[in-house]
Length: 190
Image (cartoon, rainbow, N blue to C red; front, side, top):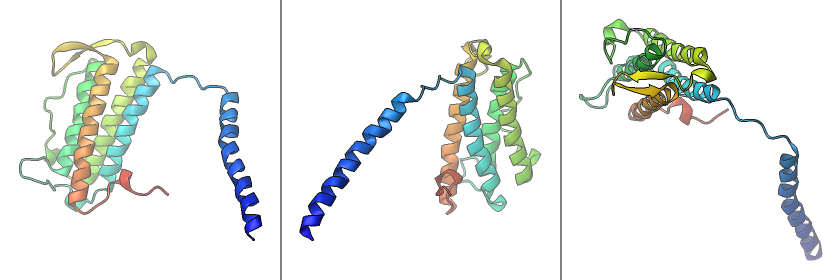
């Protein structure tokens, strides 16, 4: 039996060592994909954070929408409304529309979970439409940052709002955990 083990182990080792080399050769032979366009990369990032916040908005129990960890913090719904509404400071700048009058929409304007979900979906869809409308040629267009009161490039402004949404996503993860729930992105994938 021992005589069979050594040759089998050696054969297995050779197979394991040559497999990665063959896989690498196959990758070298496949043509390299070209880089995505700047507007596609931006749009993908915009849509990804939007997808995550929309998933949370749809998933979190409605009876916990007014939960907040401390009195000084926004509620779960307030976080979503704030993040979504902030997008209009970008979108409206891009489309030369009037800026929102407030950073935080009032909760009584969005009384139900369905109202909040619809607003979050619309805010990200409107931003995506603005990015698509500008396309690659518009990525370097200048607009005025409504907070810094200075000119910025469209893609820089968009990435700032993507990061802003990501920060609120991170805060909402804590709301999930404090509520004894697992955020959609942290669940095992099927």
